[in-house]
Amino acid sequence: MSYFRLASDAQKWFASAFADDGPLRTEFDKYYLCLLIGLKKRRRDQLDSSAKDVIEYWISDYQGIRDLMLGLILNDELNDRGIKVEERNAVQATCKRIFTHDDRTQLTSDGMNVANSIAYGGFRTIEESFPGNISPRSQFELMTHVASLLAEH
Image (cartoon, one colour):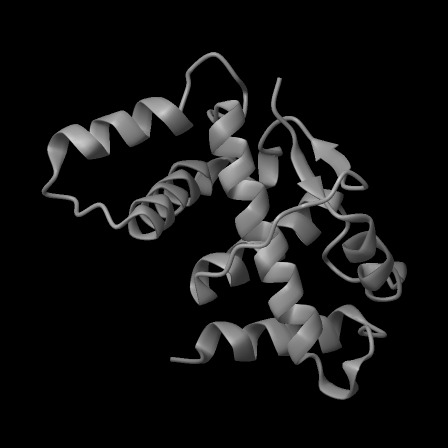
């Protein structure tokens, strides 16, 4: 079984922002923000052994965009490996390597490693670019910063 994972440093960094009563309430919300930024910035970083299992499936709030996110993860993996979408055999091999129907995440162990490294790269980007090199004190501060990162070209 594959798990979405967050590094312990990410858990600590998000703690203040998630202490308030904002709309983001789940561990998966943190993971998703990191994954979005990692995909946008095309950044990956390797998780260490202190990473915490977040959840083993796409929570209901994210079911509607699961296939889109899986497609973006595939696109990132193809780009990372220099595979063009016209290279049918290489694309099919990559799909077989990272996707499965036997897991609630729809990701193999390799696929989950790809997603988790993208999410951790996203966290590092958020953390390193946050004003004042401090963690956000509220979800409003966090979401304002994430929105600005997503808007960058």
